[in-house]
Image (spheres, rainbow, N blue to C red):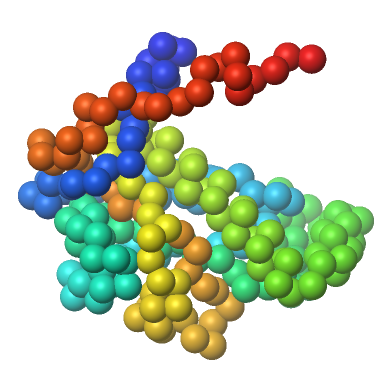
Length: 212
């Protein structure tokens, strides 16, 4: 991809308000976007998240009731609910260290120093702060997902206009270690979406970026 092609993709992207419900994302392209979620970066590599792809029409209809009745919930090709872990515990850290050691072919004991740094970092916060920190990591995954989608010509709409408690109830998250943080619809824009041709209102680069 050339630099100019990347900018074209980023300019292509906008928060799609009206999706074409008749168009579906091809499976091979959706598989790539799921891999983009898996490959999303997170602090310490901990991946304090889970991604629910909601395909069931009835379930989507229930979620729409908790989403200010926004049509993107039911009309998009795919709907991803981004879940965040409610805490960051030693078992969470150990689970990642076990995976890291296995992938890198290392003795887990060689990661003890790294493990202790992460455990100490988490212990310095209360549970509410750890949950908030996890949620910030989840937004990194959201950004990667939307950018990857734009690069392959798929529209997205990030959605915060919903009731997290309602989502948690519909998705039966009570008693789990996860809660709903943000939602993203993906598919193809409708020809009726007037926002598709609306220029992006961004502050000039000179106002936003400083070189020191």
